[in-house]
Length: 261
Image (cartoon, rainbow, N blue to C red):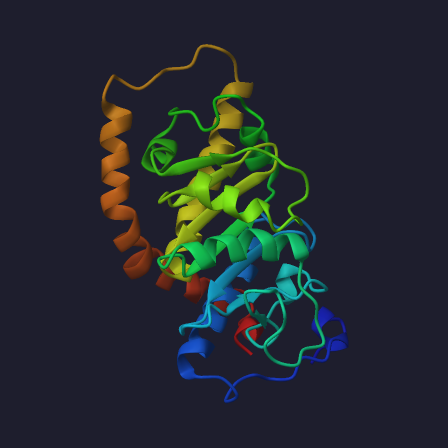
């Protein structure tokens, strides 16, 4: 490998052939999501987290190694943990305790929560600090706004007792604004979750730009936010799985195919 590449100094034993084909595919998809988060500038050094559940009754799921930047994450470096946060297999890496608290809560409570993604972008944090949360100012916001829940800030999420409150606040929603903290998305696949997160983040970015441009905002006609919410619920899942995620995965390979190792 190129000596200038950050991974050249990290010993990551390959997991290819040591896990099932189903698990390997999930690992590749999740590693691609990490690389895409870095590409879009949504990463926060090493301090946010994306996860994906491994099929099976054990509720094992994959988290990022805490020591790596998102642009360094690979399919083999992802850490498989149990419901107590313990690594299932030997690994040279540790995981983020706050990441475990948030992600284990959702994975354990929701069978449809195959993937969970959480970010601390400036736009997401700004909207999370706004009293009214995400406003129906753009089509993007209206498509996802009806599927968003809210959870009040309780400090850095290291208290496992917070899990039941996260789950209660999330309910059956596909996304969440963590007040004074950031954004979260839930999906039945890595691809669906990532595209949902993309929409939430783009809506937050647009809201901050619109509010900073002045107070003469054009509100959508009565009834259209509700209509757009119905359209988003119907189309986002299929569009993400069949159209957007395959294209994003090709993009990740073009950017740097090392994520799939």
